[in-house]
Image (cartoon, rainbow, N blue to C red; front, side, top):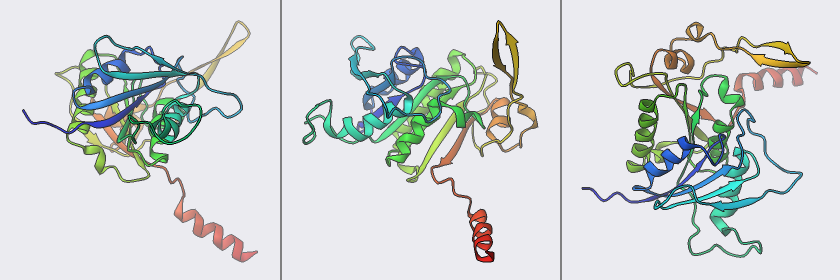
Length: 269
């Protein structure tokens, strides 16, 4: 059996430190990596890229599995907080409160997985997602980031997600993610028989059919996506067709064409 070099893996999520899906991912990676978990102490779904700046954060070391070498911490903040703290502080200084140099066991993370999330984060969902924000935050720090999300809850797709992550680590595929880019990976509602494989896709831009109902004095959001009305090479469409989608996202959101238009407007005035 080939002796694969271990990498240092950070795992975050938005479902919280208690998530069995995140734990399943962490346990799957232990044979191939030094695994460290930083996750919110409570569920943070839909918080996007929010982070904490006007109040302090609590960080607690926790045990997430018996007889499995997983270093795990819960944080009072958001998914972005978890990755920001883990990459920007913990990897350099550990949990020391006095600053100084790195501890003997501290070294940079090679890759960050955010998930496995319960619920899809394809298309415009990625803009709202705390899970995707975890991968984006890693990319901001120059660490390859990969968000993993399940549209359905079948055990088969969780196994497929775990196998994908293991392959990324074992074969060091994260080294092929350019600086400033992160992957948003979504797995379909499928079984072993209906799963069609992986597709590299672009991000769908179709909005939800959002609407609000009024009950007990409160407005409740509801709605879904028009899955089959999206472009046939997009993540939403292909995810709905039974494919797992890998969509590369860029940190740089500058629209180059608009720069030319704005410069023309400035010159005209």
